[in-house]
Structure formats: C-alpha cells, structure tokens
Length: 216
Ligand code: TZP
Ligand code: MG
Image 1 (cartoon, rainbow, N blue to C red):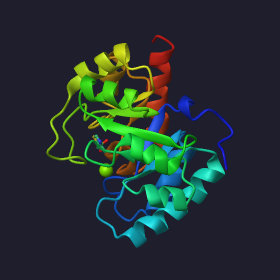
Image 2 (cartoon, rainbow, N blue to C red; image 1 turned 180 degrees about the horizontal axis):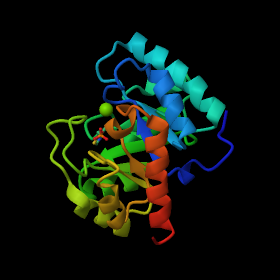
Image 3 (cartoon, helix red, strand yellow; image 1 turned 60 degrees about the horizontal axis):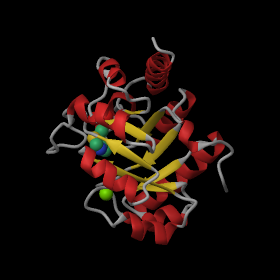
Image 4 (cartoon, rainbow, N blue to C red; image 1 turned 180 degrees about the vertical axis):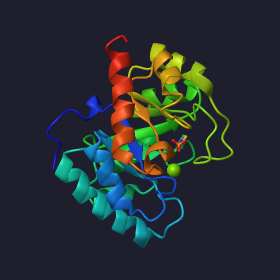
C-alpha cells in the first residue's frame, strides 16, 4: 500500500535502537514518537532472533500504517518484503544497493549509512534513496565508530543531492550545531527512545528543525 504523501518530506527519523525508558514497551514508545511528529520510523534490532524481529516488524508496520508514516527495516530485506515495509536500511558492510534494489524493486526506499563524503557520493551513484550521515558525535548506540563531526554534515549539505539524515549522538542540546552545519533531517535515537516523554522530545526537535528551516 503506497504512502499518501511524499516520504521525502520527513524531518525527524526515529530508530528503535537503544533501550527504551525503563518499563516502557517498544511499540508504545514508538507510538509516542508518532504523536510527537516523527516522520519516519526504522526497526533496528541487532540482538533479537529473526522471529522477534519479524514480530516487531509486524507491530510497527501496523502502527506506522495507521499514522501514514514510512517504515524502514534495518538488516532484513526479506522481513521488509514480508511485512510490506516501505524500505530497508543498509550499512556499508551489508548487501550491495544494486542487489537490494533487484530484490525490493523500484518502489521501495533504500537508505545507506555513510561515514564520509566519498561513501555518500558512492551511495548516491549506486541508487540509494537517502543516506545517513554519521555518527556526527560519539554515541553508545553505535560504539566503536569514530565521529564524523559536523564537517561531514556541511559537506553533505553542499554535495549530496538525495535526502540525507544527520545521525549519531544528537540531542536537544547539540542539534543546533547540526542544523547550523546544514542538516534539515535529523535522526535521534537514545535522546528520544530513552526519554521519559518521547512525544515532547520529538516536538522540541521539530521546533528546532523548523526554526532552522525558516532561517531562525
Ligand atoms: N548509525 C550511525 S550513529 C547511529 C546509527 C544507527 C546511532 C545513533 O543513535 P543515538 O542514540 O541517537 O546516538
Ligand atoms: Mg546492517
């Protein structure tokens, strides 16, 4: 079932990585983020069994459908197809974009994590629909990966033509720096999913993004 709007309009992307606030259930937390205005959701479960990922994917597919928000699955193109997700997100070490495109077809969204302008331009040439630019700051959600700093964000703003999302260690305290470097789409994981009030944090992120967009 296609989305009723252009998925490229999203400003805030939320991923299920990282722990929820203690005692909170994943699907409820994600629904809070949708109420707060999240415009794209990704299921990223690096530790669960395939069965668990499939169960979460089915739940989040139903939820995002109800809010008409694009739903992306990390790492499992087969699960993305099975639940009719809107797309997949791939890392640098995952299957090639061309291979994922053959499997998923032209209508699905393919996103790629990139850590340098060179990787960003290569992903664009290979047919990615959007790229992740990060981690902008060091983050426990993706340990062991060096921060790319806001300099890659400003390079992406100048040279990348497809949508790009700044990601990694972004909080309400530092999002201003990321916006000042030229990002207009933000992905924050632990700052939102780990919060006691995910909807409020989403609204605050969106306020910051919209004010940057308005030139403020
Ligand atoms: N890719 C680059 S950084 C990152 C991913 C999945 C983790 C971002 O999580 P957080 O908690 O917003 O730093
Ligand atoms: Mg992966």
